[in-house]
Image (cartoon, rainbow over all chains, first blue to last red; front, side):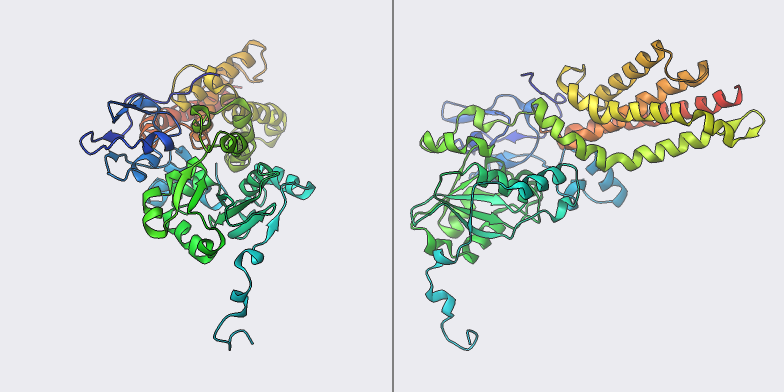
Amino acid sequence: MRKFVYLKNVVTLQLDKDKCNGCGMCIKVCPHAVFEISNKKVEILQKDACMECGACALNCASEALTVKTGVGCAAGIIEGMLKGTEPTCSCSSAGCC
Amino acid sequence: MPSQSIINPLRLMPFAARVPKVTSELNWKDKLGAVKARLAINRHAYMVNAGLYAIGNPNKSSDVFVTSNYKLTFDILRKNLADFNAWMLVLDTKGVNVWCAAGKGTFGTDELVKRINKTFLTDIVSHRKLILPQLGAVGVAAHKVKEQTGFSVSYGPVRAEDIRAYVARGYKVTPTMRKVAFPLLERLKLVPVEIVLSYKYFFAGLLILMGLSGIHPDGYSIVSIAEKWVSVTLNTLVTFLAGTFFSPLLLPYIPFRSFSAKGLVVGLCSAVILLMFNALGGNFVENIAWVFLFGAISSFFAMNFTGASTYTSLSGVLKEMKIAIPIQITLAIVGLVLFTVAQLIN
């Protein structure tokens, strides 16, 4: 199957290596295999594959990861702009994408 | 009587005996419900009650699988738990699937903690382990659930179909079970919803173009609308499908990374193909107008598919939109102006 990669160099994911304790939780929760572990520390292997879902940052007990999360959804962003709110998944009331 | 007693008589029953049982078989009603949900019919009312459910004959040491109360999700999970003796802990996600609900926080740490307490889970099972779908991690912080309830969260596979293999491997996921793919069938399943959610744009566009096609060198004429409505409708339909159906279908094979650019390519290609077969149905200027309109409309709908896709980021979509929307608006305006001019020189 063809691999899907979205735009280059836009992702806000950041790793503070000093805080990382190498538990590997981020690897377990990442749906796009962004991380790998080397020398008992996690490394960002393919940053462009990140979809900013935020699972890694939320599950990082040592708070080594930060990412500005949100929905990668144009319709939701348009709705947010029209209503003057943060981008929301417009499908929130209608099930979801 | 119960409200008077000091001990709620219900509490004298074993907790486990009060848990509703479900089967792993889906009946025709479940299947019809799934089709309707995929077509966005009554989609946000398609839910089950939150709480604990039993599948098979679970006991104190049986696994607990956590899921959302979107009935489509609930059904997929119980179907994949055939022959299991397990508990299903259903969170109140307002009828939204796990991933989207986790993004909104309804499938989240607080709701999970609350649901564990409300269902007396600590009395029902003797172990302290929960199995969550991996995508629930977007809303649940495993370490916080542990702190607050004593339950440790294990993230299982992304897809319920992999649960059997996951359990058989000693509760270990393989790298493939962890990854979110976006195969053809998954993309196609999302097309009907996209179409249903955007058909109003389609009719708005159609209405505008129908209105403009009444313009005539001698004034406004209903006759020319009557003459043109078939080709206008067909063209609008093709460009709508270029964005909502063909772009998602061919997604990985269309050049460019941004969805709006992919949609533009598909739109322009459709226009050129129709043009080659002389099937756009207008004079020279009108046909050129259609090429612009095809690009604008298809690009817009393909861009909207970012929300259905499984790999776009907010930062990426924002960047894409900043470039794409001005282009789409320009193409649309040029297209509409040319379309009007075409009617006047008819």
